[in-house]
Image (cartoon, rainbow, N blue to C red):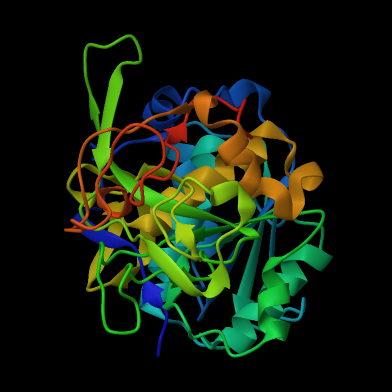
Length: 355
């Protein structure tokens, strides 16, 4: 089964005005001070080629007044799954994923270095190799903006690729809302987000309002959530609505494409070239990866990062409205409310205190 691509584009233009939230809005919504962002390395793990990734990133950062980040300046590094210089054939879907990940990491942590690791194929084996390469090259944060159905993981060797003592791994919870089947009566979780060592990122809809924060969020209807059949419920999830499996999500950020973020992709997914309004948990996971980068503490947290979010839930924006499906037996699995819920986890970033 191919991994789920979690970016959905809704609007495209090649010239300003640019639609969608830019860095200033996202930094405001999540109370992140870009002037004090760290210089940690955020790795984004992708598959398929994106020959224009560096030039597209330059367009995005230049338009929004962010510092240059290029291979020449050593701010950006692009490698294959083994750390070499070869690249897989171009793939429009993965190029869009790449643009979203690099742009959102830049938006939240403009001072961070970026490492783009391209797997040879979208198989879990190659993606696992790419994750290990990201860790070996010094990434403090590793973002996996893709998802496979729970139970797809073929073996322990692949699971360990997402567990690093010196790096936080962040993954998308998926874009299909709350769904069940005979093998997953408590909702279908996604891998690698359902690993207890990975920060699982759900999705919200973000709008401006007149509150002190200036923004409000509700659960996005397509945010993935569920209970893992592969991983047992960790002790720090004792209060979640899963009987025995690890629950997703842990945290969330904006991912509703109807009021989404601005990204730049010239490669052309579905013949859309240029500025695109995008969403999906690909976007939200990269935003959260950016917050970890901005906090500058990821190397110390490592695989304990998910647990840390439950201990510091009070330092997040609690999302209390919206749902991603129907779950009358355990409403918290699919309906946002006070404290933890499936679609938005413990809430959304509110500064870096929880990170």
